[in-house]
Amino acid sequence: METSTTRRPAVQGWRARGEYEYRVLTLDRGTRVNDARRLLTEEAEYGRWELARTLVYAGGERRVWLRRKIIRAVSTL
Image (tube, rainbow, N blue to C red):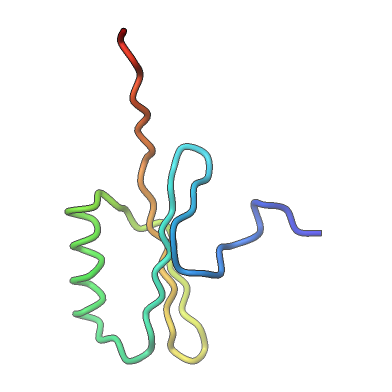
């Protein structure tokens, strides 16, 4: 039986866990290193994402997990 801590998202998209939200990007083996670096830099600068995890598969495909802090607005009324 798998627990939620050992299970990893298998699809590209948005995930929310705890106080962070996660975004999973899949880069195919044809993506050049400079293009991947540029993509991740733009996500970090404009979307406030940080690199949480990377995984490189045997075929060359890369899966990248980005995370950012969830900021909850508190009503002052």
